[in-house]
Length: 323
Image (cartoon, rainbow, N blue to C red; front, side, top):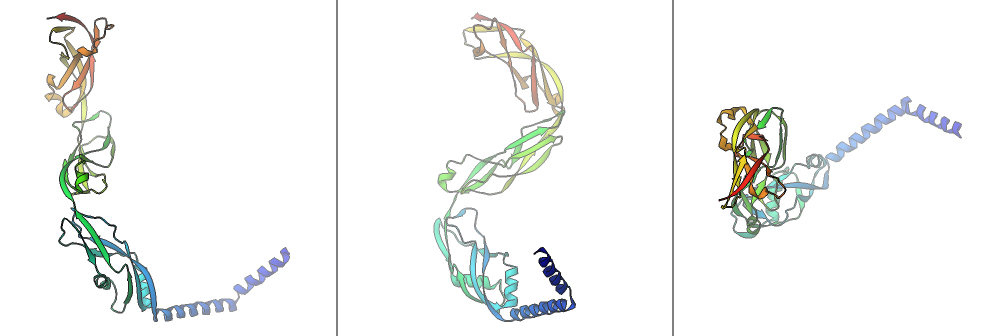
């Protein structure tokens, strides 16, 4: 059986590589090409989908029904022209919807209007026999507008010996939005897409795309995230302790009353740091019966260019007196 198959395979191989077989294949190819060229010159019917894109819709107008993304065309033309159409089938036809819009309503693009639009994309020899859908009905409503603040969403890591000299901001800080009134009444802010920056050494401005909101349009699609970075150095100041939440009839005395505070500060801000930029807090509400006359202090930076605060000593002795 195996020997028989080998003999058959050998004969087929010999035939395919013979002069007669090559001649036959050449004539077959020529015949197929002649038939194809002849078919291109004859009139043919064809059906294809024409993509549609819509322009001219104002930002404060919401189309309430979905518009067709394709038109199904039945056309008649010679094969050569139909072949060209089929090659360019992904090129969309644009429909301009700019017009006078009222608070709410609808308008139609009729079959004659569609036919006129389509013929701009076709040759005079092409006959359009059918369009589906033959009419496009556009339902719309006018959106309310308001100014809404933009909140940046970011994750920023600075390089060694560098710090943010200020909280990153966006420009513009608020934008105009367009939305149905019931949505606009509850919309408090717009967030940006997440921005991640690592090993930052220099100040930069980064384009930040706005995070889409259902049924909401923006006056702009992006804002600029401003990131200010500078090298930092270490500085120490003596800061007096501030006592908070203490009843008026109570007097608290701490030992010591002034502590050393070491912190990181941007090089450009080193000389402008003031004692009032840092607050060392003794909170009366933190006192417990088992504190044994000692309490931990807390520090708060009141300037954006100060970070990594350390207090020495971090807890102090205290006495309570009645006034």
